[in-house]
Length: 169
Ligand code: CUA
Image (cartoon, rainbow, N blue to C red; front, side, top):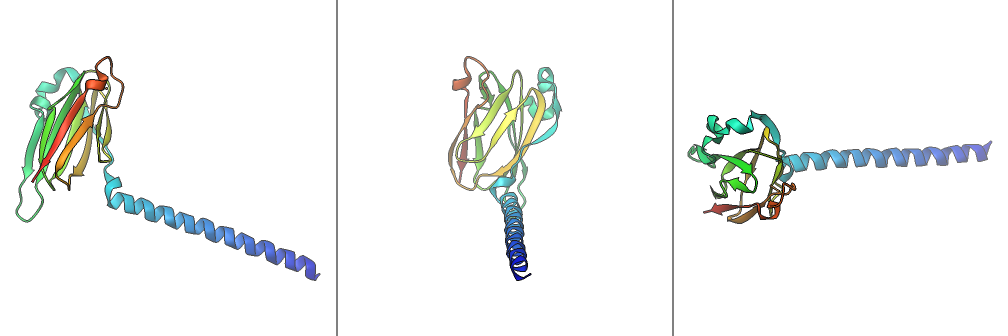
């Protein structure tokens, strides 16, 4: 009967609309994920091995924490390695100097308890766990002073646990 067909037709039409909307959302999400990975969102910290907290000085990476230039290839941005050891209530080194535009790969660990490494004005926000090495790569495209804070409550001096990253021309 005609009425029945019309109802069916209407339902089918709405089903198609919802399916199209869902499909569109799926595509939108994939595009957003791809975009964020291709830009600022791609700096996800990874586990990069283990480092016994009481034997950090025996590791080349953490014996002298700080900045090491790893590549000064002509025509390319310099690559640097930054190692940081956190402990209650300081970062070692407390100040990190970087050339603007350098591709900096950070290796971080904690000597005692759990700490955080958050860099204001960026999306860097890493958890530092004793025994684990956290790694991420970041390019500071703007010169300036970036404050580093510990954002994991680590004890009485937590709020004084600060660092600085100076990005220079
Ligand atoms: Cu270290 Cu809070």
